[in-house]
Image (cartoon, rainbow, N blue to C red; front, side, top):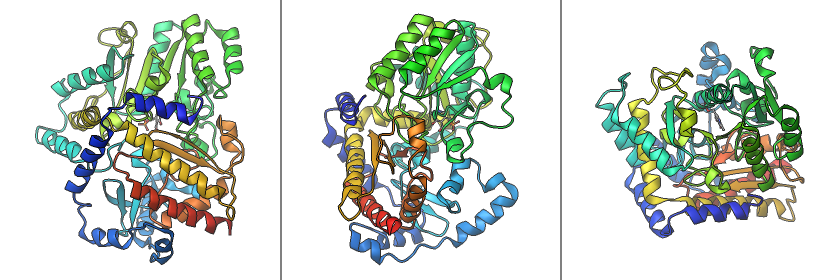
Length: 492
Ligand SMILES: Cc1ncc(COP(=O)(O)O)c(C=O)c1O
């Protein structure tokens, strides 16, 4: 955990030995699929194939007229013109781009520009867009009805599969989002321990429930707001937010309040302040303090689950948390979340127990079908070694470019399989405070350059980028050429 090399090695260990077979399957799937359902975008695909620096310079400029018009309309009827704040692209200094369709590693906007997508619906699309297995599963499920409000087979299969893949899971409850999963997990932890305080870490984001809007990452960090009006102080004062990777601060809080702390909730690898990895010592400290005090350890694996390794960050850390939260990958791009863990804890949830939590659309058949198809494909192909290689190639490429003599821009790059961030700073980024010190203005300039060159990177310094199993070496080359051109332009 302490270094990139360690994490990648652990992921490789967990991966199927037949990496070659994996790429074969992935590539076959890719070639079987058309490049999208919009013929006009296909023409653009060829025109924008970038495989070297020279071609970057030859590109005709992208136009964004339709996106601009849609944004003007959206602002009239949707607050800020978007349904989730980071999408606004505010912090990187431009208007949002409205997407029209997606396929494989690409997205196509309303103006028919093509992008290599490193947002991947914020981590959900680990197999890329419109993966044939996922699409087939959704198509089959949709013909059977979109929601029953009664139990169905796929929910049982999903719970069984998740418990099989993640050893700490003995029981699982499906919900509709990561927010709901984390919010429900801390309610359960409070009920189980009969304690009120929750410990979280600065820069971690666990969704937008009141309890978590304390020094949170993601959109709050992006927009420079550390908490939210409307989250009552009576609730937020029950959340103690500490610096990530700071074992002294953690020990001190437990020394003073151990019998009041219900749980530690943590992003086991932060994605929501940019990618930040935990130290071994920090992980051990959390595990030990929870064990000694009776507080529950909650791993929020909404981003990392089934991505950084098949068994998530807890597989890399060799940790069995009491509870874990999931979302994104388990829904194959449909709205979903889940929390699960120790049976003696989970049994307290209604109707087996008295801790109330419910949902009209929980375990929705379309979401279950898409999620099951995605997880089953991952199980059959175990693409994690290859995902790690592609991500590392990208990460090393960024570092090499920034270090070129005629560029010489200080850069830190963090990566784990399927997730990567670059920070413009000469100091290691180990917590939220150090992430906040990096050059966000330069990040914004480079981001705008990337977008104009067909690379859709997360529009915030404080978000990890996501690599999918269908990103190829050629895609990495294209991305690095665009990065170099954008960086050169930005520092001119
Ligand atoms: C680690 C983590 N937890 C929770 C959430 C909230 O998930 P959702 O946006 O599905 O509510 C997110 C969202 O990005 C996340 O990254």
